[in-house]
Image 1 (cartoon, rainbow, N blue to C red):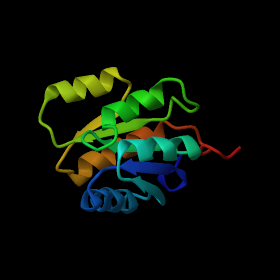
Image 2 (image 1 turned 180 degrees about the vertical axis):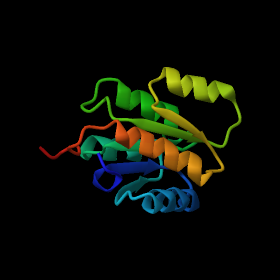
Image 3 (image 1 turned 90 degrees about the vertical axis):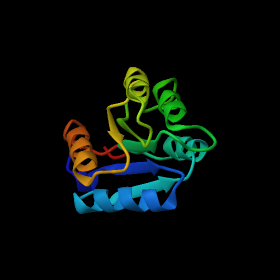
Image 4 (image 1 turned 135 degrees about the vertical axis):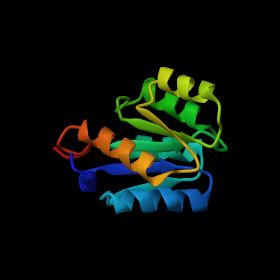
Length: 135
């Protein structure tokens, strides 16, 4: 799938960080980027939409990134949707917990554009050619 066809949901409590992430994604060709400010809103939007990739911060109110990841992986339609987890925490435990819970990647904050771009392009390259919700 090409980045422009992929629908991405970005979940982060910080408006400025969502803007940075959106900017990086737009720079590498993603055109459809939706945002959520907390874990619960992100999960509700995920369940209501047909997203191809979810990018989530670890630290958010009303459900952190790990809780969002676990909710997506357990018992919902499209549970195989790729999830990229971001965190400003320096703990290796976060990375291992996220990967064990089924994350498709892990990027440390502050966001370094090449790391996010490379992770997202790798994830999208592995997606089916037809975006979710279109057949």
